[in-house]
Length: 321
Length: 272
Ligand SMILES: Nc1ncnc2c1ncn2[C@@H]1O[C@H](COP(=O)(O)OP(=O)(O)OP(=O)(O)O)[C@@H](O)[C@H]1O
Ligand SMILES: [Mg+2]
Image (tube, chains in turn purple, green):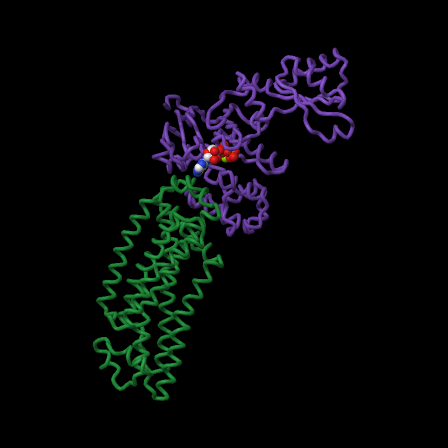
């Protein structure tokens, strides 16, 4: 372990059991310095538990982890000095102002006094909170809290930044800002460990991704490597006349490489006498095949649209392997 | 020990606790009732009794086991006058200890259980503090206000007591050695005890209110001291107070060793 000089995180058969649930199961992975690493998984897949174990705030039941060559279970404080964690909920004290929150954590993290004020001002500025610096956090909106929590995560300029679902619940503008920040961190050579259940987000930002299901690693690799599975895991939405539904379902189910065809409720289509069918296991490259099959069988298509794959689609594709 | 981190956490705990109504209210009301309300009320009654020259039977009974030298020092005073001085200096002494005990317990409840309740514990767990530093910071953050309320209460009580004993008997009685020991030796130990018990309680409950209620139970032994003295079982001598302080400090060590043994962020986080 730790042979390669720029490996910052390794886990070996890392496992955590809570009572009867195995939150993380035999997880082995390696992360290099400077990577943006996507950690994908549905609710309860074990993402947060993994982040907690890597930072030594939860003890593993079995297996081991190394962060910067240190064991988080025994040297947690040394690990945490160089990591920043954006927790799932912002975990801010509503009685403090934004400025005081950052100053409080700057002091805990021993940010040198000479740079403290400047660092805080820069972060408040970067996260567009300068004009609310002296307002109590209790009056902040969800997006503002999330931005302040992000600023707190970066207050000591950590080498590894763990982001636990940083965009969940944010509006599109805020999401774009968070994405820009991740890219910014990546350009500055920081390692980013991004927990998300948003596949498009991971695809967009990450060098490599790991897919976790029920605590187990389903797949790990760079986006290219997973690309073929991801392509297969896209879906295509097709709108046909409501009277053609049974025939269309039958036809598409027989059209390779469609894995599954199902009718989807869509009021917009229904109002126009149409019905939406979701084709699973196909990507944008398969659009011509689908169109050809429809034309060949005299089926009228009102609309055909490749969709971003959902995490569920990825699971489906990966489990097919 | 990373003192900068420890201080940052302790300072923040003190400053936000003092901005929280549920914390400040008992911190103000309890001292006002104990250190001002009751001595003034009893003083007014005693003063009237002294002026009307009716010796109250009750006070007479209370003052029976007078401390040594007490009779000589206050020779020539009437029973209500001596009785009030005895009340102010001796009978009320154990009540005073409620202040540091309760104050540190309420701040500890806010900073330990309250931290869980407000879900801010997680961000603190991810800081590079060790478990020991975190516990120490939290203890310091509750102990300082506890001790401060104790000192403040002592000053206020000294003024109130002197005004009232002057009104009743034209004497000034505080501060004396007994009360200086109470305020600077026993009081800080009581503050440490109140918060130690609350810390242990906090690891088992999830809200400020629950932790505060359990922590408040530690004032019960003080009530025994009050009753014991009132019943004439003993008198708070200097030596008894020195011993009481010593016993409390020893108890504090035991409580903190227990607290340190159970304070693990990994356990706290697993329970979140
Ligand atoms: N402290 C705990 N006590 C008991 N069970 C827990 C605890 N923490 C996590 N679990 C369980 O472990 C599993 C994994 O949880 P975890 O929070 O790591 O998932 P996650 O991938 O972060 O999910 P989400 O997307 O909902 O945040 C879940 O079944 C969860 O209920
Ligand atoms: Mg999670």
